[in-house]
Length: 261
Length: 222
Image 1 (cartoon, chains in turn red, brown):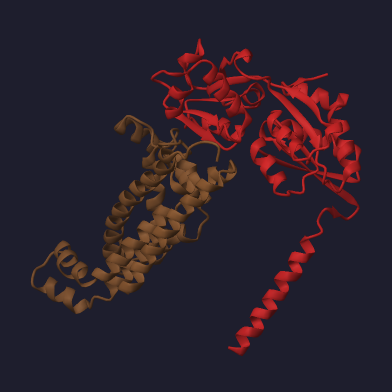
Image 2: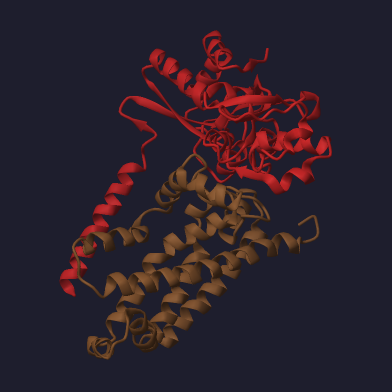
């Protein structure tokens, strides 16, 4: 028993010292690390932008945390140490603004996008009008969970606007973020799905079969804001500035995003 | 809460979870009895390897099980195609997929419990029956099973409880379709993400009560 107690104390000591070692990871060596929580649809282009940014700022490391804007917003509310937040809508940004977690003076609408319906590249599904999502070939249509995923919220809004939402619900498979929706369609497990035009462009395993009329839902505008509790304010502002610069703009446009003035 | 409590939305995952767990527990018992009888009581080449493989879901993250099931059952796989051709609907994103996930993760617990129970039946009894001309089926149903009823009950309860609690693999293969494939664990996950803590709390309470009752039942038996 005594021997076991000694071993347990040793193990506990090792674990505790390892944990305190990890606690101060926000600046490793000489580099300041900033955490950017960004909508999943930005996955590819932000990785490009990060590489370009870090190449010109050797003292800063950018960490990217992708997820549904609603889920990221929750994380920030619960105290996640993010420095910058890029949401795929204005709603989640506004909710943080209302709680005084975002610096209003630096809040900007950065990008625009379009909502489309995609199908697997090898499927022969055709959609001429939105009510044709009800067809024998479509057993499951993937949609981001409207409660947390903006693309799903836009899709619900458009379908509600056309009086089709209640009919779609029984065949709707909810994804946790827009890239999961895309994956559901890529693997053929869902026959169609609502994603952004930029997601459709990023994948060669899906094709766009329908573009949702933008007047049927609110404008798709990506907002970027600096978190008030950021401990790396200068770096966050610098990255924010970079996102609005010509270099980033070129990358955004290359991926199909609309850049707002 | 600014709107009336939606009892329908509350009960749908509860019924679905009970349905999935009940069917999965029956299936896993059948599989477990068969496996414990065929594999557990014998010695053959590769037995340890086979048993280790069957026990893997006990220690693997559910995401690995979910991933493998997706590869195996997805619509691009031949199993998935065969299923779709036979049942005229894909298996992924249906509650059947939830049953399959539950069976896979519950199997190790059921198998281990049954194997131990069957092993406690003296071989002399079985050999005596065989000597009198009983077939393997008769030995199983007339000797082994009646003499290990307690282990059977424990195995069933553990299998049911594990099936009820299955989350990761289920979410990956059955998806999250409210009213169709949203089980209690999936519903809790979604409720926490959308800040519906009352619902998350109620569902958690339901699961805690059921799991407690089930575990208590196995302990008073043993």
